[in-house]
Length: 370
Image (cartoon, rainbow, N blue to C red):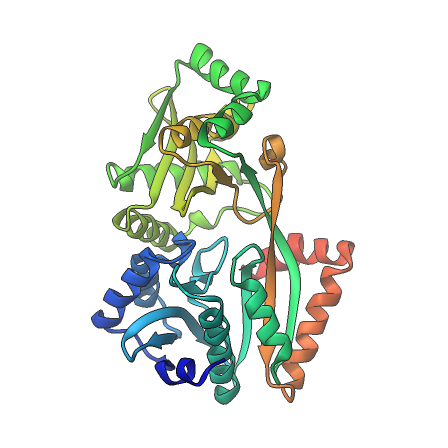
């Protein structure tokens, strides 16, 4: 690292709700970032700050005093720190300007780790995207630091990718099952497929989505969180924030006078994320969720997108068309003297390497506490 680089770069780590000046700079950074992750979108995070009682922590990395090159927003829970976007996410990205050089990216993470070391905080960074172009620099900095650092493979994002949007459409429409689902809904139920890219009818759409979700998971070991009216209001706020940032695309199926299938789609750089889905259980045999995958591919071809990301989780329906997997990790950081945190981290890693025990945790213990 050159002396010049050291002189013109600096970082800050601050606590408390960010002001309007920060959000203006952050929005410019996010719109010029490499991934433009919807889970770190400015209006979504601003909404989270308003809803969250936990302390907000903001890391910023600057060039020439005031040019924001990178940022990350966290929340403090007890003695630990995690991404603010854990409130609703598939993947948590650090936001770096697309013009950042390799040296600037390395310096960003060096500054970040130095700040964490000085603070004495323990971090559990969930849903870390292994495919992010900066991840190798983050890992190298973490492993070379004086901090305790551990990365654990934790989940996957199944993905459909093709060379061109048209090739993606041809690949997905080549699925006989998906074509059958679409045609069965049209022919037997006179179904109409809709794509909404603004906030038109948003409240009613979300109400129908939540009600279908409650009915879909009724009398199962994992009943819907949308039984809680506060959770319904929260998801409405999330969708409205995404709509205001211009990245929400809602796909649905109408039959017999109401919506019976739903997908919440989110735009990222060059891709569409299949973030959340449900269907009315009365239409289970028609598989409206699978039918909507083909409708999504048609819309993507019209809008020049060639990657369909199915988000966090390895549910079987995703592999109807998925041809790749992206790895999601959990990264743990703390002082090497923080023995309780280190022991907890090693227990989590041990649990992940024992599938039967992890299955018990994921299906029985975790849902109980949620």
